[in-house]
Length: 425
Image (cartoon, rainbow, N blue to C red; front, side, top):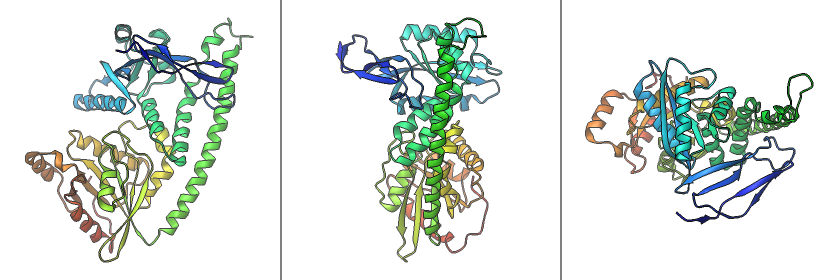
């Protein structure tokens, strides 16, 4: 390993985070600023510098899972495997995993004391100071775990990780607003405790309103102001979307929905030659795209690709992206795109159905498109055709183009008459 590297470091002075140069690092360890404190009016709290330990150019991560007794082992294992893929999507590398089974989480620390001690040992042995839990942590649980691990360990939950990935993927102004709003909604209840180290300098309670508590109140006011601004901007965006949807009335509309990495963007490209980015990773794209397909008869159909779903999707994100997902709510047909090669196919379909119900757009006619059939053998294909059969199920491989013509013919059948029939999932 190189004994020096180009890395970031910095310090905080007042409300400004400064970045600085290069220093030697035999163990590939460096410091970087956390938070986004560019000025005193920033909605983000002013924060200390964190230590980041790298391995092979990636941040080292320990993942932690808690299986509730009675929960399916297969479901739990798939959830933990998915957490590992999320870590990879965020640019990290899982170097250790800790599991526990309990009847319910520990109110104070989520996992039991013995497991917490074991986690601390792994942190010290692996020199890894980033820990990610597969479930959401309450603010007090996060603080207690960080304290138990020594105070310098970064503890993140699944929602925080997903929000981080969304922030790195957001490209358009609209997506950035939606993600920032979700981040601030997530951050607000977690502000408490960020300045406890200052308040603890003052004993007692009466007359002990230290700088930590004052800073907390200041950050909360600034954050609330920013949230209000973002909500107004989203309201304006929704008005613009409604106007655009009004102009599209009279044109048949199809919405592509599904679990993340099911191949929705690849399918959109195969149908409309959209040239949309399609990567083999979770949440490769966030921004919705609407493209036109014209049949040889001259009939025009609009296809809209939307953000993908995932289990334990943060509710802040769902609320922030409601204006984007409203496109699906007004579509004539919802196409559920699923990865036919994935072992958790049934769970993925259940997650999508639950999210559609939560968004109150579950009553639309649906087509189920089982994608990536090029990745399964004849035996698996036969089993899937037996399990998922019917006129509203289409098998395709968007990557090599098989089944696309049959899908387009099926959509064409529904254009003249839109009577509601039983959904395939």
